[in-house]
Amino acid sequence: MKSKNTMPLPVIPQPVRAEELPGQSNAEVITAGNADPALGTEGYELHITPTSVTLHANAPAGFFYGQQTLRQLRAADGSLPCCRIWDKPRFGWRGLMVDVARHFFTKDEIKHFLDVMAAHKLNVFHWHLVDDQGWRIEIKRYPKLTELAAWRNSIGFGLDPGASRNYRADGRYGGFYTQAEIREIVAHAASQHITIVPEIEMPGHSSAALTAHGELTCSGNPCTTNQDGGIFHGIFCAGKEAPFEFLQNILTEVIELFPGQYIHIGGDEVPKDNWKKCPHCQQRMRNEGLQNEEELQSYFIRRVEKFINAQGRRLIGWDEILEGGLAPNATVMSWRGVAGGIAAATAGHDVVMTPFTHCYFDFYQGKVGQPKAIGGYIPLEKVYEFEPVVPEIPAEKTHHVLGGGANLWTEYMPNYGHLQYMTYPRACALAEVLWSPKESRDFAGFQTRLARHTKLLDALGVKYARTLD
Ligand SMILES: [Zn+2]
Image 1 (cartoon, rainbow, N blue to C red):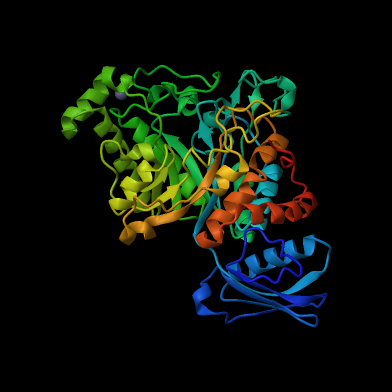
Image 2: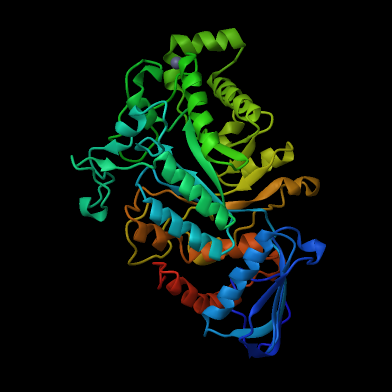
């Protein structure tokens, strides 16, 4: 990055190339096609002189990101510093995941969250819609999911009941999105050039679904949403046929609602003891020649992948889907460190890096005075050190690293203000890692730009963490 330091460009993420020119401009923005082909569909060129502001791009996403840069440049004092910028993203997958199962966030909160993501050129919203403690998506064929499984007796997790407003008239805690609301959110995301990746967890973390449909467990007994964090035995039976039929019917509705390429099926943290005791599961293993319960999990995921592929979509799951053999076309989201990502990319599968060492925004971001978090410690600088392309991936396989994302597991984030506090400014650092060239990484420079960038966060109404130790 060339810089004359006349007036530092307060841009996050940092552009690939930016040259500061003397003066400022208040000219109208002129947009034009035919940018440098090397900029692809998301890149843009911006030229600001005292008398003109010109934005070139090859596609709508490029114009959109150029506009986000203009917005950031204006946020400092309203005028535009003269400059020339040539910019495009390093990675195509620049994500944030939000868990709405542990606590529910309203349609308008999600739309605001998407707006702030877009202002940071983040483009994948991974929506963790179901987990043990709640089912959040209306499924027309199975109304009990939202009548029963979207609710629990209390806020849970030892939290103050007053920390959330999401209570039903009868006092039960939770909520869900109607299909009309989901369509509205999907359309809003598209207007912000964000793709939504819906996650329907299976075969584990499924206590909510199995609260409403207990017949789909190994024992036939229902589960409950009234539980705090942990790994539970709310697991679909892999021996009976009914769970597959149920999940396929759900995925059919999910695929109709979400136009993006990827469907996330979870696949993480599946204790196998139910399957070991279950005659249906054991019979399935004998019929299919499966050696152990890990292979039974692999059978489960492969079968679901076949269905998803037949609908023209791609399956993505957490790195546990590697165990027992990876489904043939699956993309892996590597969270237990980067080992899963290395294994998958080396085997020729696409991967998204979200290691808990750098990308778990439910961990503490400061050492003192912080609200209760799940544990760990990931300060801003640690996020900034995140590198999705690790050296263990052979050079000819690095193109399989689609990018990365951070995860907001919300056990201890009972309201939207708290969610934003845990997200920003760490997501500013993430945005820079995923967009800007690796060689331009400079934490001191980032901190200087971040201090200016908070004006934009303020203008966007973001309740970010301000002082951190
Ligand atoms: Zn079973």
